[in-house]
Amino acid sequence: MRSARAGMAYSTGTTCYAPSPNLQAAYNQPYEINGQWYHPLQSAQGYAQTGIASWYDIASSSHVTAMGTAFHDNRLTAASRVLPLPTCVRVTNLQNGRSILVLVNDRGPFVPGRIMDLSIGSAHALGLVNQGTASVRIQAMQGNLPTPTPYQPPVLPQLLPVQNTQPAAPPVPTPMRTHTDNPYSRAQLRSVVANTFAEQAVPQAPISTTPIAPKARPRPATNAVLARPQLEKVIYLVSAEPMQLEQAKREEQKLHAFGITTAHLVPQSTGYAVKIGPLASTDNTAGYVHSLQRLNLGNFQLSQKIDG
Image (cartoon, rainbow, N blue to C red; front, side, top):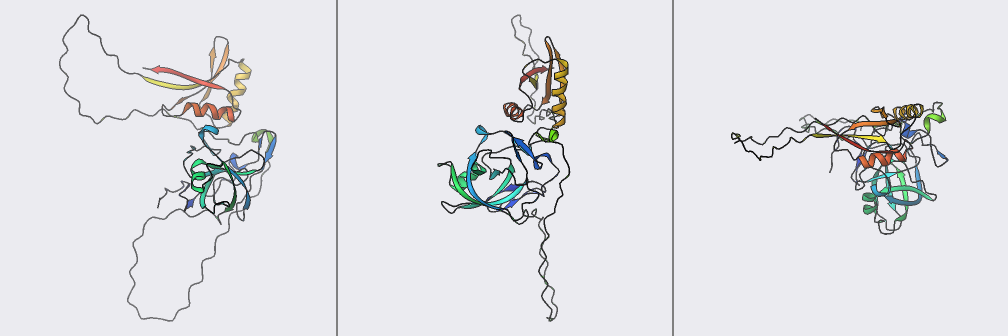
């Protein structure tokens, strides 16, 4: 059985854990998609629905979820339009009887007549990949399952005389925390995600542990080709089209409002552009560009320079 670090949401199909949803986060606030407003629930307690579920993967969606976490299409996750994120649910395929626990950590599907988008990993476990959709039953867990506790050594029983004692009362379950809506501005809730992208740092190159052989003294040669040291590439995303200064400032402010703090203006020969970065060399820049377009944050393209 898989164990989880504290605070890490996951599902193995038979167990599921998610921390209490942050109801103040933008991904749990009302949002608008294609002119339709959706209002996420303040609590998943008692949620049970029957309807059509479909499945999606990176090719049809994005490399990040609405929560800003990495999307892995082979994990047991799902997307819901209204459930608070994250939430553990039981999904049952009513056509074959298969049932698993799934972690809901994304928004969707925005297709009429469907109530859930399953990752391809969840779809495989439920046996609905080939047909694409299936009738399912969705039931929210009665509170997300607790974080696994560290191992404690067993307490050995003491050899005491047997006494007549009353059995202890069963523990009273703690009710889910309620939440009262705060007034909000429509202009501040135009997107599903407020913090999809955090500031990315360029990681340091790992230190090699291979023993270094002693170098022989090079002999002078008239036609010798000297090897140039490999220089590190620094990665940026730059807006695809140049803009006037005022428009570029508005685009920069919009990115800052969504938590992309590395966005800044750069002058060009025909105007100004907005640059995001530097990004880590391991980041999937194509996925970031797609996600920025998906969130109506602008069109960007890859820009690299040699550092050194």
